[in-house]
Length: 75
Length: 252
Image 1 (cartoon, rainbow over the protein chains, first blue to last red):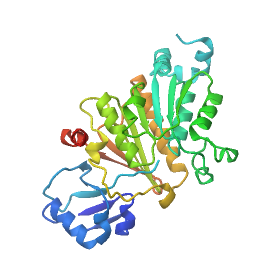
Image 2 (image 1 turned 180 degrees about the horizontal axis):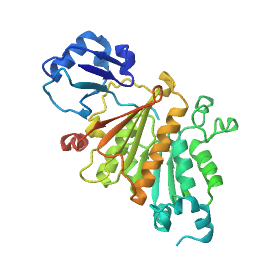
Image 3 (image 1 turned 135 degrees about the vertical axis):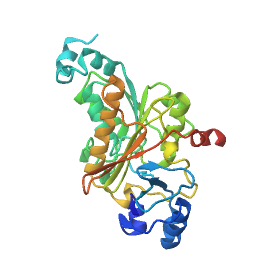
Image 4 (image 1 turned 180 degrees about the vertical axis):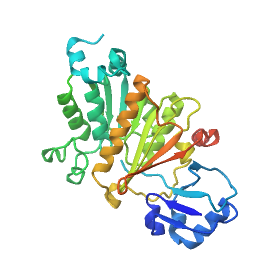
């Protein structure tokens, strides 16, 4: 499963895209990301699955594309 | 009615079959508010004025700083220390004396957003902080006005037209809440490439022209993402989320 990282999160995670084995759902994915990237919990971001913003927990598959989308404050 | 002077000045866009005199008249009758006269606001103001948007409001309380000059292209070196709203107004009136400019030398927040925004039909969010962004969103939702959002970070930009109608998403439908402990990330800390707000701001002005004249497809229902390092554009579909919209009402 591909994970694409946007904005300030690329600095937190250290890369703009990476591959992982798909966890069963989006909540598990978030838990895994928070434990792997310690400072991620300091940032607000939204989970995007297959180019759609998702609310709540959704089931994930290995061919899903995930994006981690933070707000951008700059103007 | 357009005068002969106006017909000549705007002839290259009036000759577009999509616009014609009617489109130009709509631009002339429009009242548009630009919140923030920084990196995004400079190109927005230049193109809206050049296109003949009849009334343009500028909200900014900042003074021009030397570190703004690489991206805020309305300002000259000699403007450092002067009011952005006043200099921006002067420059765009030099470019097009046929438009009317209204200045608000203040920070837009929850205390004044409704009052300032209520006199305009479309708002452009060119601000550089979350407090103002949420204030614009909540006031525009309350007043049923569309707003054209852009945000930038280093080499990346986001763009969307929010609250275009009662079915389109708002900023809170993408990012529901402003955190109390939000890490403040802005250009002064992270840096930004000067051309990025130029590109995103020009796209904001383009969306405004489409909304006013009713041509083309407006960037609503999705967030457009641009990366200046690899020229990639991508989109995220966003649905209207009534629960997120009402977070503001619950805070009242």
